[in-house]
Each structure stands twice: as structure tokens, then as C-alpha cells.
Image 1 (cartoon, rainbow, N blue to C red):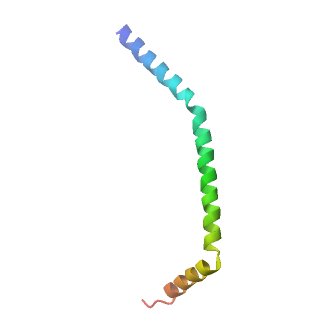
Image 2 (image 1 turned 180 degrees about the vertical axis):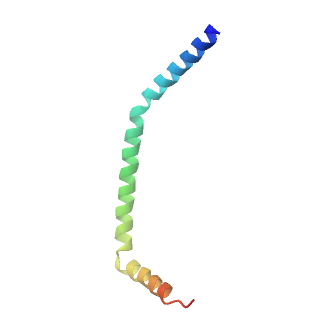
Image 3 (image 1 turned 90 degrees about the vertical axis):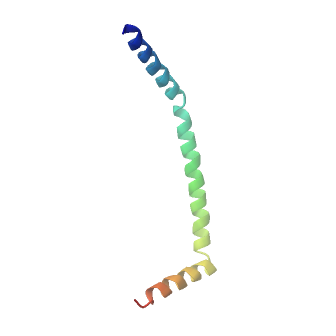
Length: 69
């Protein structure tokens, strides 16, 4: 029984050490994903607020509001 407890404890310690090694990567990956999302949002905002797209969206909203039920 003592060997089994030691083996489980050793496996747990090894897993904890492995998790600690990757702790820094998650932060940098999160930061890069956030920058990509912000860049995509900026491009999408410019497209949506452009003249032709704005008019098309306004047309869709007007048709939806004037629809008879």
C-alpha cells in the first residue's frame, strides 16, 4: 500500500511540475488573441460604418420595421 501511495504522489508532483512549465505561454497566447480580435473589430467597424454598407443595413432595418404581421 505504501508503494501505491508513493507512486500516486510522485505522479501528482510530476503533473504539477509540468503544469507550471506551461503557465507563461497561456498569457502570451491570450494577449495575441486579444490583439487579433481588436484588429478584426476595428476593420469590421470601418466596413459597417462605410457609406454603402450603412445604407444597406438601414434599408434592411427599415424593411423589417415596416413589415406587416
